[in-house]
Figure 1: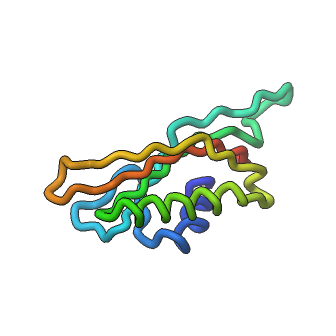
Figure 2: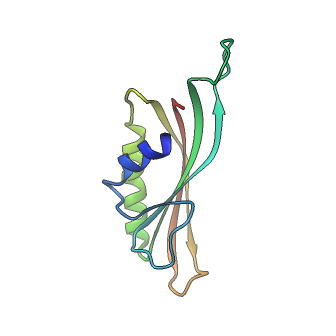
Length: 120
């Protein structure tokens, strides 16, 4: 459910949004999201917990360093402001910049991680 909500929220900023990896012929800037971990909130109640902490990595790829950086910043600001009935809080935990030169065209990559406290 959280992936669906994340896609709905980010698709306005990043229409070229893909889970785990982009297809071969993608449009830039490409945004790839990945859930790295889900840690349920322990409770004394039986059954599946209602909430969990999820760690997401969101990568932005573009031929332009500035375009990748600016989109990553807009995504960060958008997610940190996210609070609704399903998502209680989002914390930005860091960003690193690199270049991916394994493809024909070198792409700048902005990698950000987020801790999301939300309903599961």
